[in-house]
Figure 1 (tube, one colour):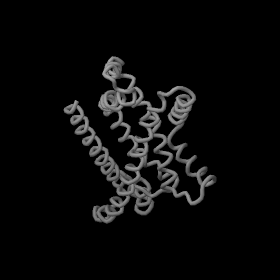
Figure 2: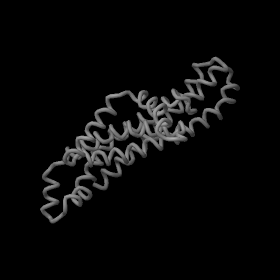
Figure 3: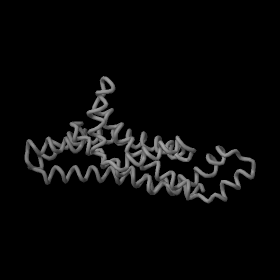
Figure 4: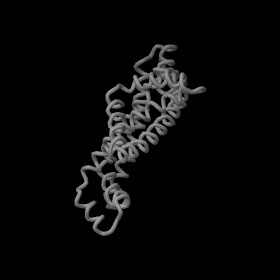
Length: 215
């Protein structure tokens, strides 16, 4: 592939990158919010805590690609008009939520019980002590692994191409089928993924620094 051809295909790859960014944003947002909720629910007594534990165990124990295929083939059997984007986003969000739940739960359990007991001794109800004392410290402790999980979620969106969802990886394969230049195309795709992950990593470090300054 000539340099001119690579420049000609660059707009296509950039358009596919927009799809990847959109999918990543949906997965990261949905997975993070649901993961935090699951972490809090997992601390409750059974059967709620047991259900959360089983969900997290199953989701983490099965490869993401299997979840994507399951959502793609099974959801249309249960619901009508399920798009590829919906199926893939749901599968990847649930998968990420399981890991986020474990990260947040570990961070909460790592906070000294003395701090929460001290908050309650000041008259704070348990829910208020959790929100005002425990959660802020837990979020600060969980930031590094959470950002790492977000970066992995961005790279994991490439598996959406397995069910025909057009995004950066699938767009690259389509170009390769036409021009047979895998090294150049996948090299450019690698650069685009690297830029996305670097932006998220940089934003995460700034957020960590802000939490450290505020606390």
